[in-house]
Length: 157
Image (tube, rainbow, N blue to C red; front, top):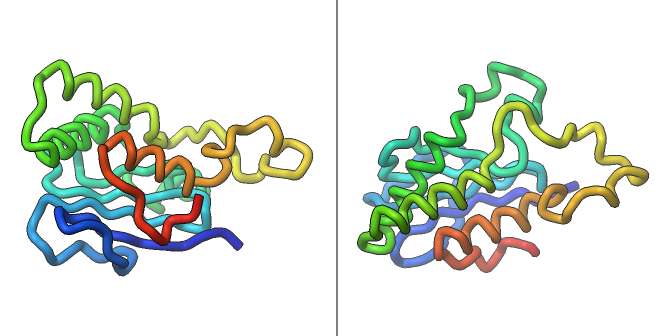
């Protein structure tokens, strides 16, 4: 069994959070909801140019093999929204800094045509993948570092 954990970040730091719930504190906030070490749902507010939801690892549509499990993803839109969030969290950034951050964050985000099929994660094939491709906790910690945030204390990895 993998790791399950949900956390919310505000300017005071990380706190445990309930999955699927919108935080009650005022923006800016960011949530990470890790599902079975396979995918992370990232929620953020304010959304800037994004929708406020992005995924790491897999998208629910790919993971559950169900197109109705979540709306279609738009990695570029969410990367722009997260870069806007990052710039606000930093109390500003130049246009070139924000554009570079947007490009960096896009590399972490999952899209609906997942690069790794969960069925392919057998003992025989697991060695061909980087750890962050297998354990979303590692990718989540690296993603949070890219946002200039610490990882939650309870996040393994």
